[in-house]
Length: 300
Image (cartoon, rainbow, N blue to C red; front, side, top):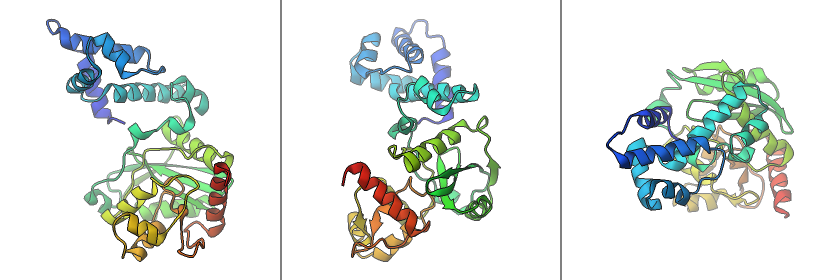
């Protein structure tokens, strides 16, 4: 997902008068068409016809002028419609479909994934950041989700909200933590809904934007975990080999144990070499329940 600065720059570019610049005027026409039909599928070839260009030329020229691709521009328009729908009081699922996303799990798809952060920011303990959080009851118990403006940074399960919020404060001691009413952070409400749909009702694991924070090695482990298919499992040693660190089995296990974004980063899919469950920071009962549910959905 493009940043807010990119979106604003694109809108300013679209609003600029381009008299005497027919090439740019055609691209502005494409941008306006995207805005008018953001809730519809807009193949690049169809947009290219509007501009009288080939698909590849449109992609290149649109990005040169607006700073983002036509697809990213459409995603940004959809997201704005989605946020506005939630602020207007629409139900989460109604807002998702009205905005053209098609499903809860696609609200924040691949184009909006935002992984990682600078080591300096990681070491700062969340200084100068505002982190919104919310809690919800699921079939696996109480869960607290927290997010920065980059994405989800914390998903933890527990028995009471007080201890979960204390854990959040310990993870980000210098951040400003804000309990999130939906009208101020509608995205977080939607993300919680999507996660609960996955945990409690068997919907696909939502592909949400993540703000992962860790060492370079931990990030490598967590990013690989995101590639494991639902229903598949592997051992700690297999995971170490897959990231080209075959001797780092203990470090891999430690990285899994330090994952602070439960379920969305599926460390529950990593087992001991003998097939045993191994460890899980939120309890083996939850790990077993997640794996059993995934096997059922796969038909295993």
